[in-house]
Image 1 (cartoon, helix red, strand yellow):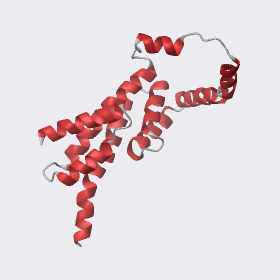
Image 2 (tube, rainbow, N blue to C red; image 1 turned 90 degrees about the horizontal axis):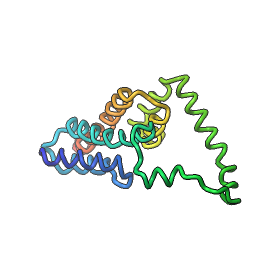
Image 3 (cartoon, rainbow, N blue to C red; image 1 turned 30 degrees about the horizontal axis):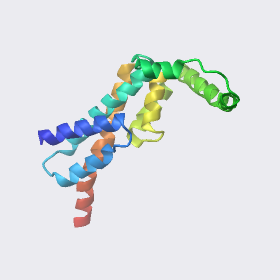
Amino acid sequence: MFGLLCMTLGVAFGSAIVPLITVEVWVIGLATSEAGVHWLLVGAVAAIGQVAGKFLYYLAARGSIKLPKFLHDRLHRERPMTPRRERWHKRTKWLRTKLESIRERCHRHPHWMTGTYGVSSIVGIPPFMATTVLAGFVQMPASTFLAAGIIGRFIRFSALAASPALFASWLRL
């Protein structure tokens, strides 16, 4: 059982870093195949792993983690304004102004970002990855980020881990 929980932690952490991995499928598969693992324990372990992985994105968006030199140079080097790049710059101006207005709104109403991030951690809408990066971008306190993320993800993964047993009990009726 301990090995399965460690694997769950690893899958959850990996799915937070690489979005192609799906921890939800792992949690449901574990809950259906292993009757001895309690659904609350699976939910807690998956939540901790997922938020630990997303915390790296949060720190990077916040500016607390320095990017490797090759990435930093590539992102921040001065590039000549070619006609194609100039057109792209003009087309995405609205997006940059929108992000700046969202950042300003989040600073004026910090509970708005906490609520959005908390709902996203449970439901997944808006995407949890996007709200994670936005939380770092608007400088949400790390304690708020971790608390809301772990509580929301715990609710999500616990419900997923309990769902196979719940459906099985409905079918026996």
